[in-house]
Image (cartoon, rainbow, N blue to C red; front, side):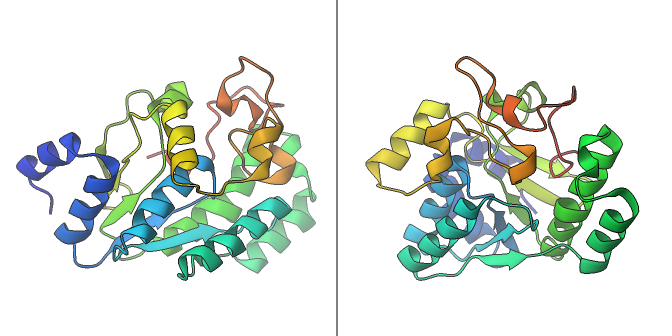
Length: 230
């Protein structure tokens, strides 16, 4: 468990220091889920460059951009540590597609959330089994939903701590880290894709648009897939 004193200490630490603190506090059970976005590339570099005993995994929904797979391969080569990959259950995908259609997520928010649940949430829950701390790349300025998130939170649904080391970082902080440390990222970001999800559910944003505006652009919602909804 993390005491109140430990939590207060963690809030004062840098992302690099905080990751080390968490990995030392828990000898096992600390995991990081990467979507291979820019924030997650920062955290991946912080973990692997310090050789921290933190399990790094990603979710392959089956509908990602080619660039995701290319970057994953480059990460594995650069750090000499493989990121684990979790896939959705094949029967879940088959049933959804056969019953509702390949692109049913365009037709209703309910259909879209069901697709996200099958392709993301269920594999994530499997990856988080027995985890004690789940590290994320969330930042408060990404969306209204995330403005009030804290550095350390308790996820009641999954019975674990959620640690958000970049929660108070600005987007410029992220870009500066990537540039300073020569960390590779998705070429899509330079084409206006700031928040990148599945290929059919992501578009480039216009100047001045919220970074999440390119996700599920055809619907009015909180722009979340369920991964970070308690």
